Each structure stands twice: as C-alpha cells, then as structure tokens.
Image (cartoon, rainbow, N blue to C red; front, side, top):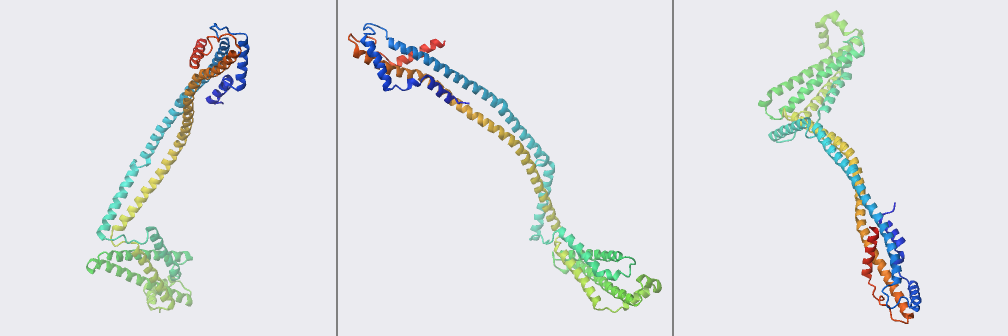
Length: 431
C-alpha cells in the first residue's frame, strides 16, 4: 500500500509534470506560435482578449481540477485512516491494555495478601523471626560472645546414632551367649546398650558445656558430681561387659553351654561369682578401651553441640529457623509474583507495541495532512509560473513579426493574480 506522500508524488507527476520544467525547446515552440500569430497581426492591437493565454488557462484549469480531485481523494483517505486508527487504538488496544493493567494490579495485590508481606502468615513468620533474633541478641549481649555450638542439630543426631551403632560390633560377642537364638537378638541387645551410652554421653557433654558458663566449683558442684557419676556408671558397665565377654569365650571353649544354662544350674549368685573370678586378658582390655573411647567421643560431640548458656543455642536456632522460613516465603512469593506479573506484562507489552505502531502511523498521517494542503495551495502557483514563461515567449515571438502596434493586453500578465484566478475558477467548478 502506497503512502500519502507517494500518492501525492504520483498525482503531481500525472497532472503537474509539464508545469514543473519549461525547456528551451518549449520556449522555441511558443515563440514560433507567437511569430505565426504576429505575422497575421493576431490578436489585433486594440483587442482586449489574449487568445493564447485563454487557451492555456483552459488547460490549466482542467489540470488543476484533476490534480485537486486526486489530492482531495488522498486527503479524504488520510482523514478516514486517522479516524479508523484512532478508534482502533482506543477500542482494541488502549481499553484492553488499561483493563489488563488494572487486573494485573489487583491480581498482584491479591497475591501479596495471600502469601506476600501483607499476608497474616508472612507477618506472623516475620514477627517470630524478629522476636527470636532479638532474643538471640539479648543473650549475645549478656554473654559477650557468639553462640559456641559448633555442630548443627542434624549432624549431632547422626553422630549420636553413630555412637549407638558403633557399640553393636564392639559388644555383640559379649551378649551372643546370653541371648539364645540368632545373631540379630544379640545385636539388638548391643544396640540397646549403645543407646544408653549415647544418652549418657549426651548428658555428660551437656553438663560439661554448661559448667563453662560460670567456671567455679560452687556454681557447678552438682554438674561435676553428675558427670563423675555418669563416667563411673559407664566405666563399671564397660568393665562388666569386658568381663562378660571373657566369661562367654571361656564357656564357649570348655563346654559350649549357654549363659542361660549356667543360670539354671548354678543360680545367679554362683554364675556372677564366676564372672568376678574371670581374669581379664588383652582382648578384654581392648574391648574396655574401645567402649571408653566411643563414650568419650560421644561426650566430646555433645560438648561441642551445646552452648554453655541454657537458652542461647535454642534462641539462635529458632532465629535461624524463622529467618529461613521468612526467606523461603519471600522467594516463593517473589517467584509467584514474578510469574504472574510476567504473564500480564507479555500481554500488555504486545498491546503497547500495537499502540506504538498505530501512534507512529498517526504521527505520519498528521505530518501528511499539512503537506497535502501545502501542495494543493502550491499547485496554482506552479502552473502560474509555467504559464508566465509561455506567455512571455509567445509575446516575444508575436512582437518580432507584428507590423502593427503591440496589443494592449501584452505585458500585463501577473503570476500571483493568475494563480489566484485559477484557484477561484477551480473553486467555482468544484462547487
């Protein structure tokens, strides 16, 4: 589809091309006509008419009318196109864009109220995070140090389970003759002992850690007593397990009888009397050392998994927990917010592009209208300037051959007046 400027150029080429350039050949032709007419003393000296000018005027009016009609059609099409585009812009794109913008705002506001900073759930999580953070800072100010917990809870639980499990292969042999049946039963008993070891290691390590908060005997005598008791109980238990192992191996070498058979035959006192009489060997001391080592490891793990202050670690844990909750809620909210906003933005941007295209075309049409009006106004002047040159050439030739006086109408052509007259003539024809 041709633009308005291209159509204007076509109309100008079709109806005004010969008026744009007056060549030397055109001048010679008009002078020749003038000489022919002058040789015949035409027009007469007293004539008020200018036949040559009148013939040109008829052609000029016809061409100007045709050009004006073509330009009028172009102007009408431009105006109609403006109307269509403005209606399309408003009804098809602007209204839809505004609707989507409002819908986007309402949807994002709804998301904010459901899962964002404006939601009760988010506000509650943030309040708890701030509360525990303030509590953590309070304990930090009281103690003048950061939290001393070196092992996170999940790792601490795994390590304590590891302590309990490590007791199974170490002590299973000692219980294999006590529990009749499969190895699974003796392993279960050994695991139960391991759980007790892990629990006592937890208590001992915690109490040792607590005692470092205010390191004095007066403040910690009960903790020291409890820790000592736990170590003594564990020492006795481990020594008994080692003796039991030695007894079971001795029974196995001599008669292959079970511990239960000994209890039935000799009773509890005689059987445990044999236990106290068992001589400890190298493997027994190795078993004792391994049990003490595992227990000591559990105590050390417990020590580094607790803070000397009874509430500091919990406050830090809760502060970190709720800070992570808030962070995850923010990430989830931002993801949903961004996804929903992006869906609307894609639609809105597509409408904005269409609006921009229409605005660009409307701007071009707005520039075309003054050009159309200016070209229509200039057309009469272009024709008048061309006619002036032809009339001048005709009159020069006419005077050269004329014997009589020059007609009074010669030399009186005025370009501006002729252009005005042409415009009025065209106006009368158009009306």
